[in-house]
Image (cartoon, rainbow over all chains, first blue to last red; front, side):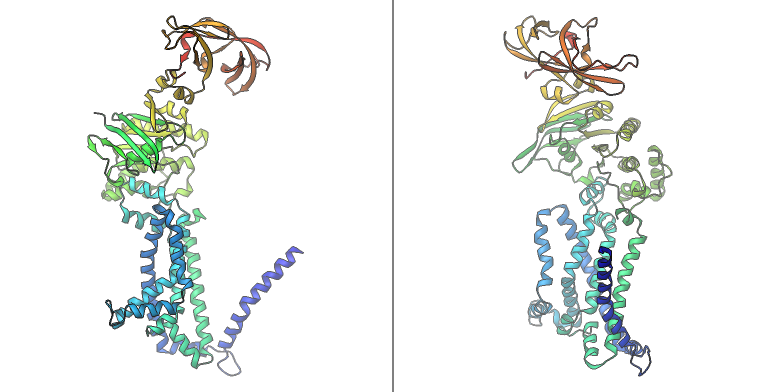
Length: 260
Length: 354
């Protein structure tokens, strides 16, 4: 009886998640009347704005990930090593982006960094890109911090640090050659989550008027019928591809297998 | 001046004085153990030498150089940790080479040194393995090779054998001692295991409550403890309460018998109670020539330990432990048997704080 209930729950769950996806995919293939085709996908891929916006968002995602890693890994490491009493405060701060809507953050940015402010970042495209990157990093902070912190929990940070110090290593060497490689899978998880957030983000990019993928998806969704579900399927494929990459990296990382 | 000189070291965490006025000189090539119970400050002393803790007061000198304010990575000190602390992302060879890489040693020289170190620890074929592919004992050997590779001035061992099983622990401690002798490296070994400390140390520092209670060779620490704590902590000790009969003649009365102690006069007055201490191996079951003090005893407990049988006997209400060798032709005596024990007055230790 218990097995039956478990199987029923499993099948129910699968249907709940898969049916909308299957429906969406099927609809995206019905652009040509009476038969299945990839016309909607061809249209999406044939649109130069798709590549422009996708490329732009990928670039900003890379910048966001780089900034996030540089900010979060040393912070999480230092908090674990030297300031364990500050962990609740840091955790609270990193959770704030989940509570404060993106629109509030972006209006704050515009107010603080407009052309008449002391740091007129919105005055140029490059400045706005920097602002958008910072905004993305803020949105990704809860995920990146937790991923890295969880990774750090699996290693004896204090002892490894002391072992490296006794061998003559400085802070940069310890971070780059001991800590980062040992939390690489966690960092990659955070990086892929950041990528997923940046690719789909609409509010910040739209209000800062930057040619990102999120506003493009919104624009397409407002004017077309078959292309938006095709785009959604593409977005899902990217996300799943990222998750697959995480699994792959974990599998090929020998020392990670040892920790598992 | 000694090679490693610790002068009036103090360490305070908040209001807690963990190390109090600790001074110690260690000669070049000497193997010194810091022995004591948990929380006695032995690890804190080690960590101050390593540079992981800053002394509240006092100074640390290595080979004449004051390193008290020097960062840990600038002290050229090798360290082994209880938890091995091998870098999980690196192979055995990379772990051993880490310190050399940090120092900027050229590749060829580095590889030769790594090979030499792996030979020294008896794992020449293991260079390509990751730490998780090694046993605990092998990992700790690699940790030793890694600590020794950059030719440190001092080697610090922070309870490196505690996580290993009994057999590996014994063989590895002997290997560590052999390697230490071969390289002639000055070593501080922290442990709470008295047998470990006594078996491999040139000198032992018995610590209690942040101070060094006694410093001496293992033989001296065991046979001539200067305080009640050292006598109790190092080895098993039998305590017998006695009344002073004649302080000048060194005579005391134990269980109705007057015993003349080897050391006279006794620092007490006639009629005072004092505590006599006896190691189990100094007490014999039954009478034996040369052991002039004979006391009646009843067997209370019998523990068969293999080569040795430990008996606990009741002497006028005081429990006394003694060891006898196992003899296959003679089974252990039964519990409740009335008999005698004997010991030589010369083996009695009169505790100073009794």
